[in-house]
Image (cartoon, rainbow, N blue to C red; front, top):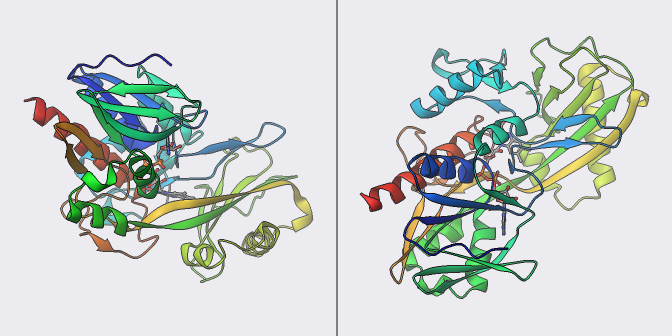
Length: 348
Ligand SMILES: Cc1cc2nc3c(=O)[nH]c(=O)nc-3n(C[C@H](O)[C@H](O)[C@H](O)COP(=O)(O)OP(=O)(O)OC[C@H]3O[C@@H](n4cnc5c(N)ncnc54)[C@H](O)[C@@H]3O)c2cc1C
């Protein structure tokens, strides 16, 4: 990989999820030189779509948005106009409709990434201070250099990058303690391809279950009227208490709960796959929309869905109930904007 030019405008964004892409987009729109590194082979992070053998696609990350802040409401309006999201039919707050992704969820990320220099399959492993800025070593042994770095991986993973590069001790104690307090709930999503169309499914394509069982919600991915492709999302607390359980047991419990909620015969399942997310939803957050650290004169920022001040989201730092609303993507969005804003402000 080519070393990046070290100039005051080069920003290296680690993570091609929504926070990283929104930050990169905003900085690019203001004329900065940006490179996004993403360890996976596609953008989106937890805004995720998967193809099973046979080619059928399933969303298995963020899918439903219940916006709170003005900027995210406006973004959803713009995405709705572009045909990327649609009204979900599930009640939202303040009379503002909730939206769900219309096509594959990753289409939103691809839309944000359009025109950006995103390098896929590039996993950062250690960040060190070097010259006027930083040097990030990648898993393949190459490295990239940049004047400014914005880390948007889930916080424990960003802290690992800093620890391996010896940068953790340089972070002010209060900031470091707040970063180390950030925690996430895990999640399970069972993807089911059925032999026929489930006519019992609500026309909105989204079903929320509030019976306290293992399943929180089910989405229909086949919006074209073809055989059903269901994404079955486990409840947060249920997933947290079974994170290390055998995958077969978890899948069976979710399949049974989905089949009894929707009235289909489990024998109608042609293919299935269970996705386990370790860092799915932030439950204990950093009390500002991003963290800024001056590392011997070089700017380092951390952002993502685990960052959020009181204010538009109305949730101060500290613990908040898991799965309290569908706001993770909004936090990531606002945090990415805040990270970019901080850098643009520094530049004057
Ligand atoms: C099952 C599930 C359901 C959800 N449902 C909803 C919902 O309905 N509504 C909602 O609003 N939110 C939902 N969320 C939460 C939402 O998806 C997240 O809050 C949001 O997508 C987080 O975005 P992010 O950019 O902060 O992080 P991420 O999307 O995690 O992006 C971080 C990126 O960094 C990359 N990365 C990590 N380490 C490295 C490294 N070392 N080098 C290079 N790249 C790296 C990762 O591959 C990833 O792409 C859900 C999440 C899950 C898992």
